[in-house]
Length: 126
Image 1: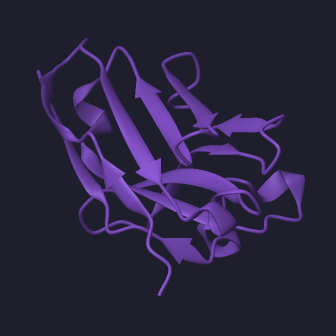
Image 2: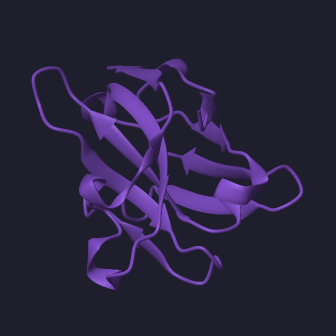
């Protein structure tokens, strides 16, 4: 069973930063797009940021543009999500996922992803 492992969640005050990390097996990391998603209680999972397989294409949800940055670290098979200027409305459970996204317009669509981690909680207090 493929395992993606997230880390780095926690509780912070508004305006602070957190970095989430997602580690995947090399075969998954190197052959799939990687995305970060979040889920609010009672809501559907939504795309936050995504990175193409070769790392040349990134997409961000409008709500996080300019604040969040997604990046790959090929040495550690890790995709990071740097989250700056956090807001209380960023409070959610964050998941990383991997999948062969073929349509460049669907990088933030959870249905394009096959492999998922267990998630990590991010809580931002005002």
